[in-house]
Image 1: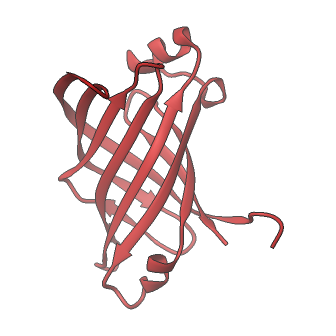
Image 2 (image 1 turned 135 degrees about the vertical axis):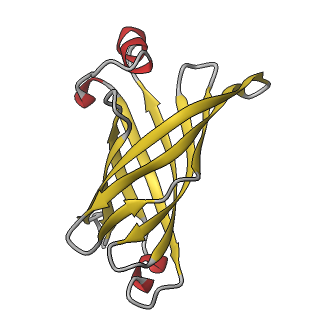
Image 3 (image 1 turned 120 degrees about the vertical axis):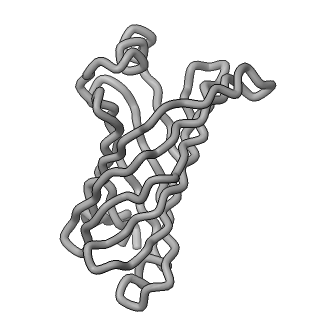
Length: 152
C-alpha cells in the first residue's frame, strides 16, 4: 500500500475542569488538565466521555505543547472504551497566546495533531483494539474538539 487512507471515526468534544500545575521541570512546564466529561459521535459509535480522565500537558522549551491524554468513553449502548492519545500543538507566538488565553482561533492558524489508540473488552467494539487513529484538533474556549480518523 503506497498511501495512507483514513475514514472519519468520530468527533470528540472534551470538557476540562481545572488544571493542576506541576511547574517548570527539566523537560518543560508541566500541568495536568482534568477531564470532566464530554461527547463523541461518529458513523460507527457515539456516547459520552466519563469524568476522571486527564491530559498531561507539557510546554517544551521550543514552545511546542505536547499532550498525553487518557480518557474512558461510554457508548450509548453501554460499552466502555479506553482512549489514549498523544498530540502536538504549536504555532506562531501571537496565535498560541490567544489559544492559551481561551480565545477562539481558526484551527488553520496553528498545528494541532494527535495519534490515537483504543482499548475495550466489548465484543461489539473489539475492532477498535486493532486500529490506529489520527486526529486534528482545535481549542475553542469551551474545550478541545478533535476530528478523529481511523487509519485504514
